[in-house]
Image: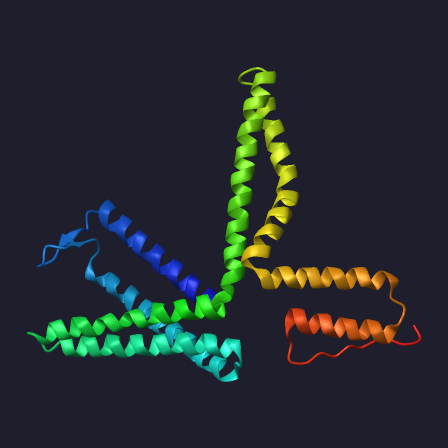
Length: 256
């Protein structure tokens, strides 16, 4: 569904760009009664009607998916969707009420504008769900963003320093300086990213960091383990604590 929405959005943007280019190139620009610039003739309106229906259908499907996910979720996931759906419902009611009240005209337009302020309930609900219940895995997003930003800054600094240093050794315009610096930065990317990501995860994505440490400890314990029942119990415990599944089943092949 997300891919369909992105394809529809990109197609809509491309259609509008092509229409604008065509209108300007062939001098089809017009000015309406309000003085607004019209870049295309009215026959292009047939493009927007199907696009609006497609977007509306995708929005309905998205809301339906959230409702189904809310009914099937439990625990923290249910709390995430509670805040998300509560904020969305309040924003929808505010939008409809504000539009209907404002259509009456006069002083009711002011009342309708005040009612439209309730649309802020959606971002507020999303903010609570993100900050308190880690909606959209915000910890992972923050840690990955910080990790790559720090690595990029370090590599850019190293690259600039190596280029300046190499140019002092080689000729001023030698391509060897750029090539050597590029190879050095490429070799440093993977180890630098792993080390920086580990440090960032320890501060901003503690769940992932603790899970990695637990898996590493389990792998180290397997080196001296000989009791199959003990290994099975340890494996079940590690999987339960790191992945938090609703059910764990371990299958072992005996006699092999």
